[in-house]
Length: 115
Ligand code: FES
Image (cartoon, rainbow, N blue to C red):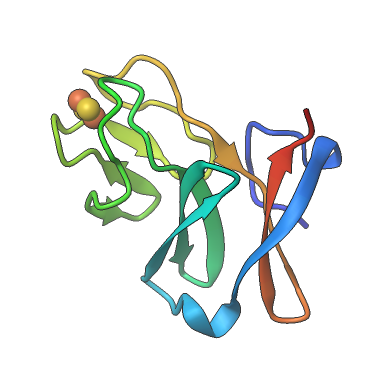
């Protein structure tokens, strides 16, 4: 039901962030929820949400080029898997948050961990 992610969806509160027609295939949407900046991607019809914050030097990540499931940080080129947030290449060594995403009645919902 959920895309692969490091955050347990059972311990999240889901927030509707957009309708499915607002993020067509290959597009992305930047959103802020409770001062968390995230970017949501539509990759081949599946939605993935990651923090818009590179773990290397806190640069904005969301504008990076995406190739299949990998996004490259625009600043120094570290690559991350948008499905899991895993850091794939240097200079990043730590992953970034990857949030669970679900679609309910054509609304894209992102899960944020409960405090
Ligand atoms: S800030 Fe992203 S690779 Fe350096």
